[in-house]
Image 1 (cartoon, rainbow, N blue to C red):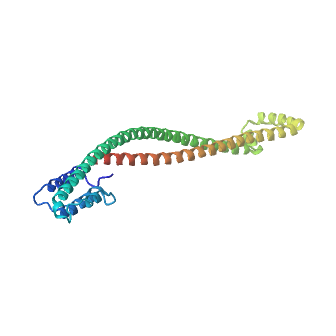
Image 2 (cartoon, rainbow, N blue to C red):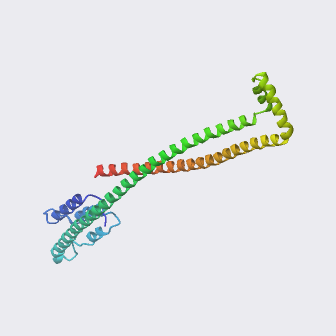
Image 3 (cartoon, one colour):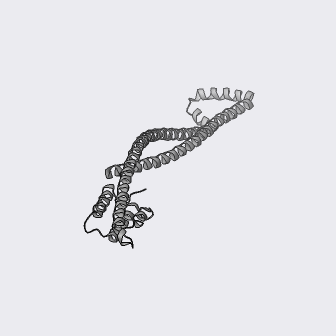
Length: 257
């Protein structure tokens, strides 16, 4: 059973029909039509309470029995309407208890959602902090890669011409002595010197290139982490928006109550 109008209005209508039963101007057929409409209006057309009123007999073809049939019909009508009022009272009581229970459940759910929202906001702020740290680390690695590239180029640019320009700045006596020493060293160990120079340069370049590759790999990992954090942040934003909408709807519902 579901009331289509407020409980107080429904009871007032039925009590009015009860008073009409015992009035001097009681007209059975008019009263039945009005009461049936009231019952359909109160309970809905699918509820068949109005049929009970329709089946009440207020008259008969037997003249001697007309008064008894009328009184019996009034008694039935009065009884039906009082039962309907009792049902409305009982139904309203149960509905109110259910509403109170739903309200308590709702308040508990609202508290849980509020707590969840605070946790999500905390996680969101933490994610922002991690993202900022990763971004700073990524920028630092870019700087290190650039520096290593510069060092590699500088190392590979060292040539004999540069060395001779440096020697040209020495005094003549020292230069002649140094040239003699260098020539004797080059004669006895030319191949070893050349190989050592190549090996040192290649090792340095290889070490720098290895460092660059390592930093690039770490950079890619950081970029992947940043993309993951960005995705989590978008999800957190969406969840915060959802919880905010729920909170707004809750406040609207509470205002209506």
